[in-house]
Image 1: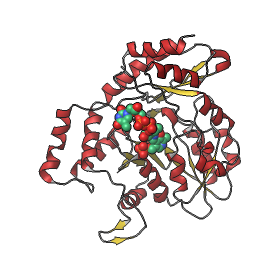
Image 2: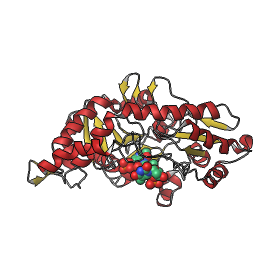
Image 3: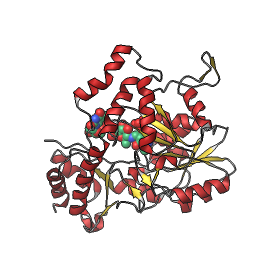
Image 4: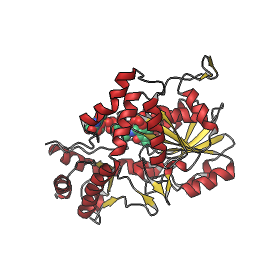
Amino acid sequence: MAILVTRSSMPSLEEYIEEIRPIFESRHLTNMGPVHQKFQRQLEDYLGVPSVSLFTNGHLALETAVQALDLRRPGGEVITTPFTFVSTTHAIVRNGLKPVFCDIRESDYTMDPEKIEALITDRTVAIMPVHVYGNICDVDRIGAIARKHGLKVIYDGAHAFGETYRGTGVGAFGDATMFSFHATKVFNTVEGGAVAFTDERYAQALQELKNFGIHGGEDAAAVAGNAKMDEFRAAMGICNLRRMDRCIAGRKAAHDRYFQRLDGVAGLRLCPTQPDVTPNYAYLPVCFDPRIFGKDRDQVLEQLREQEIYGRRYFYPAVNDMTCYRELAGEPTPVARETSLRVLCLPLYEELTPAEVDRICDVILEK
Ligand code: T4K
């Protein structure tokens, strides 16, 4: 049977039906109804953050966070990483701001804090790092740089759902953190996302900006779109939140099996669990060094494909090599480019069995 890179975690059909029954009875389908409110409160508890604002997807959550933090000004620049899903950069550019690409660290593929300050100019308004694959950025150093230069920090935490750093929910770092609840993520609401924040001043702005900028019922105070989460997605979120422990345990079992089989093999590099971080086992990235391993990333991808096993090249090409961003590429980011050529994400999901992991590893290790 084919093994895909991921497989959505879901509640039973019966459990979901029970959760949506009140929606059928009330006919309150959207616009921040009671299920939305309940899910929001549960999420704040689970994520360990003071406040979250729910969105119809992660991308619009990120885009709206930029607007809510009032970062938009002519010529404004945002320092960000090119080693991410293109959504991160689009959220900057669609707000009329310029992305300035900062290279990443080889160790965990997050933004290299050593390289941030050289990119700061009098036009810089914010830093937008990404907790890529659920690897948490150096939030301490990034926070210190931002404070020193008076910059805002918005984390793209699309991959970091439920993780903690030194016991604190990762959504509590920076001015705002976006989480994605897409079907392919550790936690899903089918499509969906949220912005976590600690400063209550952002609550109203986020609330209004995801609802056409409407202020006080009838007037519009800002130009904005529609990015609200509906009641059915919120109900899915409530169901999936209940089963997070099971979901993480299944992922951990598969993750640990990969480590038993592949960690320490010459020419392969896996991302170890970070110190002080409670991981969520979102992705299983493996970096291939063809000179040592004997096969390059794309050869392994193809060999797996022949056996109906589908890894994915998250994230290739690096965003600053993409057609729509080549002209904005700026300074070269050699680590990000090399990483984009070498990393393959292997299948990882709740129901992936150790025997299936063995089947995948056997193909990879075949000479
Ligand atoms: N920032 C970052 C760093 C992100 O990674 C993302 C999204 C965002 C921002 C934006 O958040 P959202 O607006 O999406 O909430 C996926 C996802 O569409 C996207 O959410 C994700 N990142 C990105 C990395 O990957 P694809 O192109 O990999 O999806 P697809 O359709 O090829 O699916 C991959 C596999 O997942 C399939 O082979 C089977 C499985 N799958 C897929 C779907 C759609 C399921 O099991 N259930 C499903 O419903 O894009």
